[in-house]
Image (cartoon, rainbow, N blue to C red; front, side):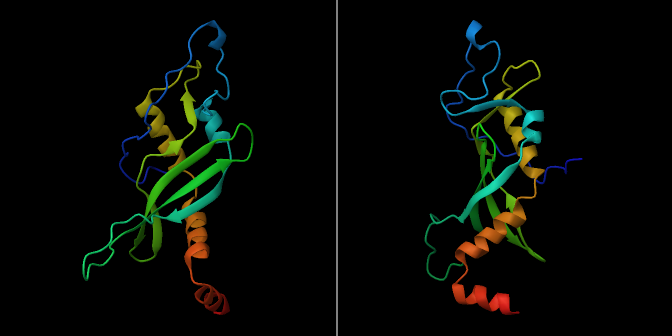
Length: 165
């Protein structure tokens, strides 16, 4: 059973969502279109295995004024499938540190995936976005992204000191 969504659905931000090809040559959906998008059902997406590619901290935060303290650490993460055609998913996150450090997805996904219904027709933009968010919220991405962030940004002496404890 998939876990419940952790937050309210963020609005999708995919500019220029192209229309599905029409006509007799496109009655059966092609797995990959010339523009790099991959068309598949949500069931096929759930059966796909995605792996962590890269995560990073947002470096374009506006500079603080005077004694201002940065109150939120945000970043991004990118995931890909291992098979062909390659599926790509990316989203933004915010670090939270209440009782422990945790990452929470704060944006709609960015992806080359275009979801289809069982008949092969493309789902509407909002429905596809909600399903992609469900898929992301159902994978254990936080731990892998956090480990990558620590390894990428922690000073070498701090990382080695942590390993000696």
